[in-house]
Amino acid sequence: MHLVRAELAPRMERPRQELGWRKALTPYFGTIPNAVITIVCVALIALFAHHAFRWLLVDSVFSGGPAACKASDGACWPFFTDKLRFMIFGFYPFEEQWRPVVALGLFFAACGVSMKPSLWGRNLLWGWGILLIAILILMRGGVLGLSVVPTSQWGGLPLSFMLSFIGLAGAFPLGIALALARASKLPVIRVVAISFIELVRGVPLISVLFMASVMLPLFMPSGVTIDKLLRAQTAIILFAAAYVAEIVRGGLQAIPKGQYEASAAMGLHYWQMMRLIVLPQAIKIMIPPLVTLFIGFFQDTTLVVIVGLLDFLDTVRSSMRDPQWQGIVVLEGYIFAAFVYLFFSTIMGAYSRFLERHFRMGHD
Image (cartoon, rainbow, N blue to C red; front, side, top):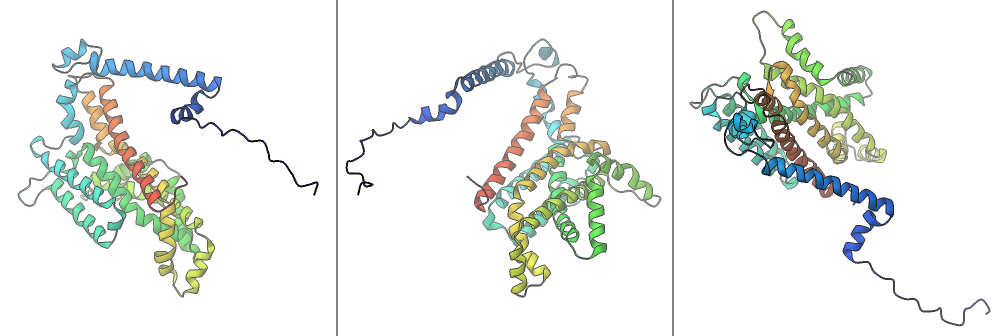
């Protein structure tokens, strides 16, 4: 009985609960080093914001021409009034620019509809196929009374989205096929898949575009030419497929072996097992790296300038190199391009996080 405590333990005061704002500021001001770092960072951010505000609004020029901008130390907004349509649509005929506007509107509307997982299915794939054909007809013309606009005059933002979206859409099934071929037990198929993946991943995209632009026509019969846009699109699809294949292979390796054994026990053959059991689970795991790859290729479309195509960043550069504005506009174009790329990349990243939460793949 001497091990049993007879008296009550002394009463302890209820621990004090920190207020919300105090709890939020504790990581930043909890210690002296943290407080110093926080104060320095806040001061630098405030200094940058002050100069950015003056450059964008206080000292900027809102009307006039190159002469007015040259006499000012602020941003030159008339530059955008003069060059905005060229930066977005490139050399597409001015009077026909309503067509890429409609095409972009249809594309963004379809993307908004496709973001809802409950609508995923065969009907959505058919809808996208019909929509892409309609967009190509709208951009190219030649039917329904639309004048023909050659692909050499396509450029700007529509071209960037076309190259990146169609490139990844075409690379995804090819990448899955390459990943399955690399995991095949047939030596010839496995060696071919490994050789293609390692060869493509071992060279930069600019070299693949250069080969498609310069070397491919040398192997074509005399008088036969391939459209520059088609060559660039094919090169991007093949290049992206190698990276998609490795992402898919990583997703397949993350699936437990028991899933394969259970599928075999149910009597499913190889393609049924992959289509119904393995790939649906692997694709959920592949969402973050696939979105990262898409963002990267959306930004890497700037390399198509090597084949004579002007994507969004190249049209911005061409606008800044205009003799009328050269030397006057230095930062405005690049800041505008950075904002556009950041805007769409942020939307892609946010949608990736939404899919992770929807499929319960996150950890928060």
